[in-house]
Image 1 (cartoon, rainbow, N blue to C red):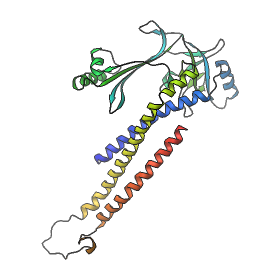
Image 2: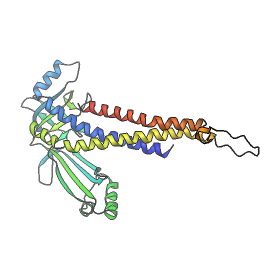
Image 3: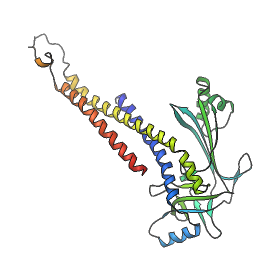
Image 4: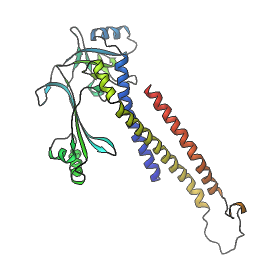
Length: 309
């Protein structure tokens, strides 16, 4: 397979995952703004009335759990997520994620609804505690990582590029918090579903929307980068495929020398240069690729715009 095709496919995949992360945060804000939270008791009553379908709804109540664990400040927690990132080509690349969680519910005085912590990803909206510094400082802290290879990567970066930026973000949910959660209610549990994420926030709705709004500029930059990666990857992918298809036809013209003289051929309008099947295919590819690339860019832009509405 052509290296150009491989690079193009890799850029398309990277752009897709970056745009997906951006879309989840945008969708989270839309769900928090558009859904009015109800009590767990009302949610269970509504689900019983709609037994034929699992409703997607928002609830609000207290965080309760049969077991907890404590952080370094002895705060009772039910969920904790640490993300370690390093700067990479103008952005941040996550290199390690450590999650610790225990089963918990959102409850009112008479009912409780379980939260599927396995589905809790970018729909978590809390005030993130963040440390920022250099890779050298991160390595000097001798912290433990979820994956052993992360420690080796940090050590290598500290040796080769010690001033590179590093970040550790901490998100957590306490059993002392009140929370708003949005998800698909299935068998007494809120999950991600119906093409929408599981959303949990320990902030008031206005504060959560302001927090998501403060990320908007960063999401716009991420969207631009994602679109650029998709466009560049598509161009390389199409170009690589076109070159792969054109190579056999071009190679067919390169025959071995013959001792028998052959009459000169060609077109006087282009200096006597012959235009064979390979040359014709090359001309077609040259003119068609820009048009095809423009069409793909327009299509990707429209799909991205439609997804964010």
